Length: 553
Image (cartoon, rainbow, N blue to C red; front, top):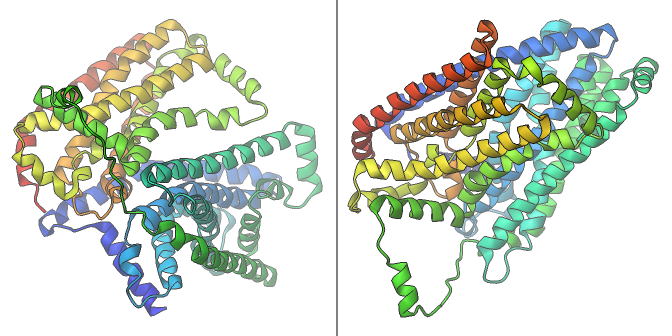
């Protein structure tokens, strides 16, 4: 046990990278900014959960709120678990250094699982924290409730993380063959994500089909105790154990539910150790090796390779090719920018009543409803979607220790910054245009509305990417051991997401309070964000070169 704890500490420390003492205050400021950015979101969740509790209490089904929360958290943890397992178990590439040490396979597997579990607790904190506290306050929960809530919080991420780990291990086990290991790793990662999305679509379709008949749903709720809870948790039965343990915490029956939930978590972890010992090490060995192609380059091909380009274009192409050729960057920056707008459709299209729901949304967005408030919502969605693209906010961090080689290249600081932000601008532009095309197709939006929305795309994309490169210039993460750490375990990405979330929320709230028309909203948003873009750009021009020079190991 001591070896597992010690190895976990080492892996967590390595995942955090090397820290500069001089930049400690920057880290503190980033954490404070993230916390402040999350306050409005948490308060909104508390208000929503409180109202939902009051509605469910009227029909005696308030326990369904717990089941819903645990189920949603489990699904989210499973989804994020796919990426965390890929990062911690495979892309860290430290297994070959750990094997010669006096550690058993169980020690390595357990430590890596605990590292991924720590990341999942952050997800659970956002999703489960407000729910457990709100339910406790509304239900008048006492000491045993909060004690049970703490145990449930610690146990909930284990089972979905085990499921995610098993899915990834089964895929990655069969990729360590042939000469194209990187390609197979990428395909396996995409397949694992595809399995997760397919499972989510299946669950949503099944749940939506259960609610097709309002009469049947009402009859089920009235006739069965905790009938709504049974329906919500049928695809994650363990969630029902957690909800029932919290419903009447402190009673003998609730202790039995808690013990059962604990046994499920421990049993799943045992299954993980057994299957992991069989599949993980065979799939990860040699994964860091690379094979080069031996190919004769003729004179004509060589001339194409060395043709003259501008410094800006050459560096931009270098950044662009690295994004596509590095699996971690391709999955988390390039493909995510293209796939996220498409995945927005899945919750809608996965429902059996999708046609009726789309028709309802179309009716809501016609006429006056497709005015100022509609444009503000679309603009806010642009900002949030753009902030989920980690290309610009990790542009400096992705270089790692190789960043200092940039100082020897014949390219000025201004051109270097511009070349690093251009890939993010291009990918963000593709994302929002795809999202806009989806909205035009599904919601049948008026042409005038689409025109104004398309115009507002430009300053929103510039704002997010300029803010992202500024954040990474001020606080780059260069001390990483794997490419995955540079993009997935980088606090800069979370800070940019908070900026996009807050900015998008403020736009919607301000328009709702003012009640501006479509023309006024479009003009106001365009002018406001053009000014913000200009200010950030001038800041980058004036301070950016100095920030580059101050970056140290």
